[in-house]
Image (cartoon, rainbow, N blue to C red; front, side, top):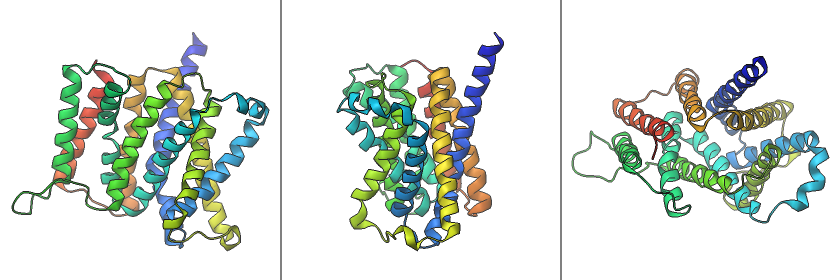
Length: 294
């Protein structure tokens, strides 16, 4: 009994720790950007460091790599784009707007599960979709402008955030078909995917310095980010395997609280009234998607 309680408590800690990391990780990435190192370059180096750390941790499992199905390539690429686009979005956009656009992901998950996995959408699911879309409209619409305008993302960072949420949903759906993969395999696939996607994005990178360019401080910041990525991934993977998806989804929302406080104090970003209202609707829809049957 005590062992089960301790395992549950550690799972809760793991998810809250992951939410804390992802709610703060935008800041060291912005520090790298201010030092003249693009988000694509810093993503490549930080995920490579995380990959090396992970390879050392899981060195005894490398003999099983050839047993992985070829379908994991898609999981790696989609997860890679999800994480890379998220990093680029939080570097260049307003943190909370980026986060809230990302949290439209339950909407995309419902639609993907319906059209790809043939899961039926019930009345609650349609209500979740409607609230998500209405929340996005309220958040993105400029109420000070006369006349009609399409409530679309306003810059490249917000489009990246939207695509990251879609990628996250697609990753979840692919993962459902890959339940046989271990935590180590899933984690390594994500890190490989981000590093690989960053290399594919080289032609559009503002700068991609060689390792000799970095100062000791740069390496320190990137190693810190890599440690956060490594530990957050492993803790979250453990947490989601030890509790229901409903509890995990609710705990993940702690990320928004961390991001709101951090963006206010570290970046002096303040949300407008319609961003608060629209964001609250998006969060409510995310909770409904997690808690209510569809």
